[in-house]
Length: 157
Image (cartoon, rainbow, N blue to C red; front, side, top):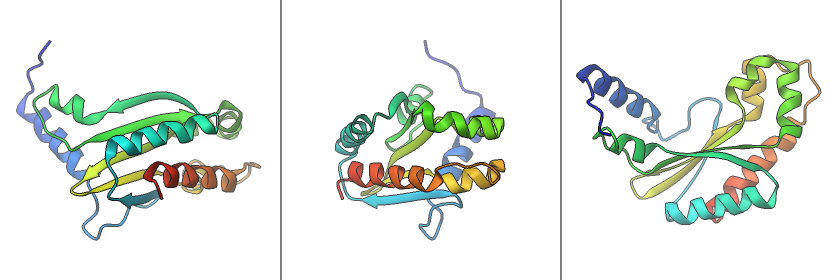
């Protein structure tokens, strides 16, 4: 079923897409980790799925934002969001502060940006700061290391 898009919705969607684009200086926004390379995005996706499987990180969902944009006659470069996690790691974070459930399960974004593919994810230390998890004994360094390893493997580096 095709949906009609009001001009206001189209403007809001375009604004959100622009906000999600790289910052003018090419750096990631605060709290976002990024690796970039010239790999094929489909190959990056395949390696990301393998890296998650190898670590028993359950893929909950993959959202294809470009396909969703195309469904409403808008264009977006290849942009795929992966939601994944391990309840043994995420649950203690949510037990510490329930609001962290807004940012869990973990997310990793792969997106085409010209001839580059970016892999981006939330820094778990940033999430801890955002949600006030400093009083809890959490393995944030381990989580950060695993996310970095997954992204590095996915990018083929």
